[in-house]
Image (tube, rainbow, N blue to C red; front, side, top):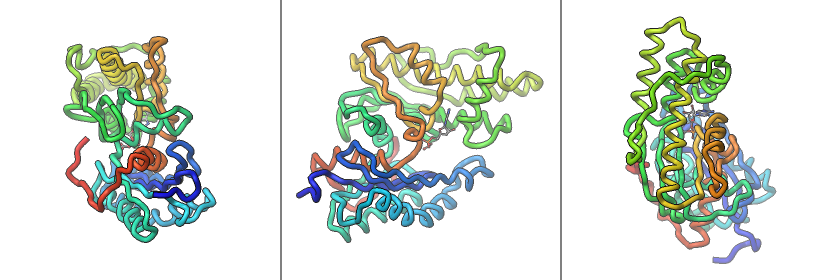
Length: 333
Ligand code: KG4
């Protein structure tokens, strides 16, 4: 395996849910391009992602995004050392679009194909923003489809500590938002409405209070919010979502620091769409002690993007861990 330019250049592709993306990354750290097409407008009227619409939109956009990513990097297919795509978890029809494109490029250019666990890629995002990749760390993955805590020992070595037993935290934000009539995706809308609360009072009880439990649960809190609104239809909605958000985020912060302090691993990474939440960042900062490090990607890098796919793949490339042309559609987080 001989690098073409002295540097290792990877093309990453992503289409697991409702973002199509292509990115070129050098040495697993430097982003040359990170083109993202968000389908949010297509799914808005359904208040959630419609799989068939998603896969069709990926198919329409992927070639253009690949061309844009290479042009922006001033590179050609022949400059690439590897190509990577998410192969799990995700919507099957959507996953296939980036993965099949990556297979074609791998075959045509005779370069390695690397299939990527989307969740592991999210947790790599801070290492593309100036932080050197360093293992082990405690990883909290929070999005619309996942809420899970891991001990990450190295590339491909994620040990699950706990995950949600029902809804993901982003899903709870989306459902509360939909019930109030704010729109989709709900997270940013709930966050900005909560900021308008004059009361700033937390009246929902703490959730999942057993300190030895490592799991998460959001279905009960979501139902409590909906019942509360039914019983108090005239109460200011900003005050209600403030109270909801505090409780939803408090559980994340508590589980994260408990896992870190119990394991003695004081480096933490928080990633996924919900990690864009500004209030979460405040709560983490006020809980963090001086000897603890919490890496959270910039809001853009919290959402699905292909730079994180190309980035984590570099770690596999240097370890010579390549993929067959298989797709794992049964994978769960
Ligand atoms: O990781 P992501 O872009 O897509 C997947 O779910 O795979 O995450 C989207 C989720 C949505 O549920 C959205 O409402 C939530 O992240 N989200 C937020 C915020 N921004 C996005 N949740 C809370 N606060 C935010 N600022």
